[in-house]
Length: 452
Image (tube, rainbow, N blue to C red):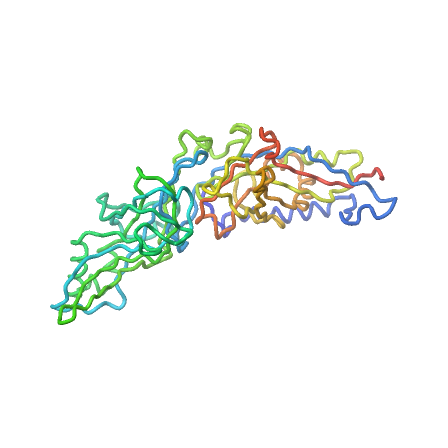
């Protein structure tokens, strides 16, 4: 099931907010403003209930677009909860613009692939990693009727490695062990540069016609060595294949020209996760949902590897049967990462939204007031949470009925600008988690007929 954060495939889910509003107006009991409770002796009492179950599961949502993000994600790291995560980048390479003037006297020197880090990362940055480069064997055209590339797609490439480099990156400082600032250089075969240099000198259609050059060169893929895991790093989409040459004379003139990335909208990252032997192993395309009670009373959230957390409130309708129930005044939800599952190496998402979802686990519209920023308890780690005001949602859920509340709920998501470029993840505790302070918490405040 493809994820599309423009919601083009989820038109049915737009009905949720409308149904909720209609349900609220259909309620025959008066709605009383929470802040007005307690102003006189005749005011109703406000009761707090925190015993309604929140059913939690991990869901796998399959493919999503990774092209056009303006970021190359490269690397490999091992996560004890989410598995071995690998990211490989594919780029279309075009001719220099303008084409340089190569004469009979010009002398070719060498060619390098040059990339610049963007300072984003996830994993252990203390380790040396190896990045390999190979040439594509197929032009990077969108397949079929697609207008984007997805995380689970790839382009065929020659397994022969054109170049590689071993490097350690300090992304926060913007430095690498190559000692050339934020730049990484990979030496490419002399023969490759010589071929390109010859084309620049002769200037046949292969080099003057960009479409013909695409069929000739096709593109490059950069990928990590599987034997040297450490971290996934973000690189800018300004990668270039730089050709060096010189003009001889009394004073030698050093020259260079760049074959850069073209069609930035088609540059994409292939992201894979090997979850064998981890708590997330059972969540796959064939088994796309796993109840938190079957996975150690915790659910797993990492959108860039297709894992989301679904929340259901199957018993909330029972509140309306309370003999003293008058109206829901307020409802708050605290979602709590499990202590010990996150660290500076495995960062939590800084922001998590709540979106409507249904039985098919599609991502719907964002819940009003459904944006939660991360609060971290740096002292003890027990009060780290994302908090939400879900009053409107609970008011609507009361009118939905038990069958609907058993399948329609909320989905934890990251904002659209982050879901396909960051690896932040969270392990969320359910209501039965062994660490009581890390259990999800739903508090409902309702007005009671019984006066204070």
